[in-house]
Length: 442
Image (cartoon, rainbow, N blue to C red; front, side, top):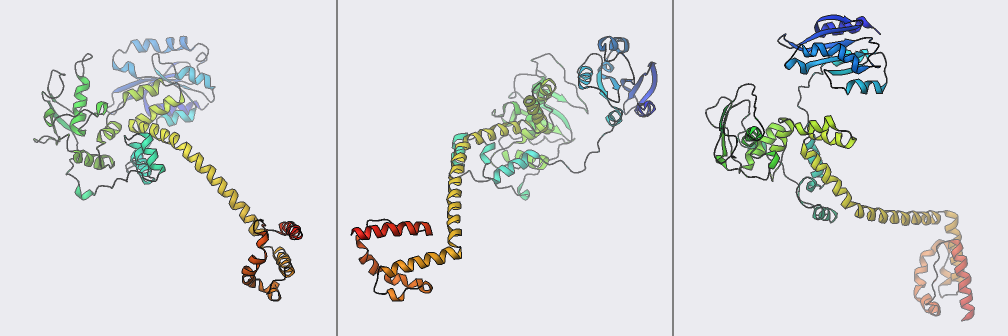
């Protein structure tokens, strides 16, 4: 292991790096304002770390942990660096939450741990909006609406899906104000019973405290309501225009709030988040995806022990709850469409089989030798019937056979009830024999 390389990385990121035990170092991770933000331990070759991890961390971390009460206790880190290790050892260390956050890393991983990815100047695409646009283009707009699955799939199968939504012209939108800072919030009597305090003045950072049931969530949802016109947790509830008043951006005029004006919130959604809708407003979904952190989904992600549970939690955090709802409806659509798809697949295979057999027959008749031989046979048989125009029949003038149709119908009237299909040399031979026997009988 390149110990000096690792120590150089630690010294470049921390302050006051010093050895506290053999091959174990400690340093301070500083904040932007050069205040101590975290206490970090670096283990480069601790022998007992895997054999008796509980005793190891008691001796290494407990004293320093209890000597630093307050917020710093939330920011203890232990980095164990090894050239190689087993998965069970990584799980043992990193799943332990006592005293510190812990990481078992290779030397290169330790260096990359402190490297921040440079953000893009281009806004990330709205994955959900793009997906909705693709579904809409495919005639599946009802996968993200509230119509019943049964009626929606029936319309899709019959070729009568709900028409697509036309995009709103940017020139017809309301004058959307960019929200930079919320200054003041006034809760009127028509907005819930709690909290008891009805006016709030906000600073650059705000801490809301209180026991359960006093209205902490109601304050946050009042902010959400004033911006979105709806509340994510109960979007079906309609609030009157006089529910609240919010002041923002240093203005003395109230921030526009009109829950019944869906166009106002659709325009905010389009200009702020790039999400376009026509029949309703989904601003509250975008706001909760990008601005309000989904703590419930974060907890589900942290505590998730199944692949499906973790995937759902990540989807809710990164893509929003609406994404999971659409996933569920798309799965139900697929299930409802499956019988029709199976039926069409069966019909298609039958048609392919018919096509394949027909192509085989065409290929057989396109063979020059077979066609010429069959023509000779037919010519010979027609001559033996001695029709009036028999002298005009030849291999090179088979078109004249049409002239004999009427005469042949009369002469062959006794055979009218017989069926003779000739589509190959073999069938010609068979049908000729059959015809001769019928002729002799008559």
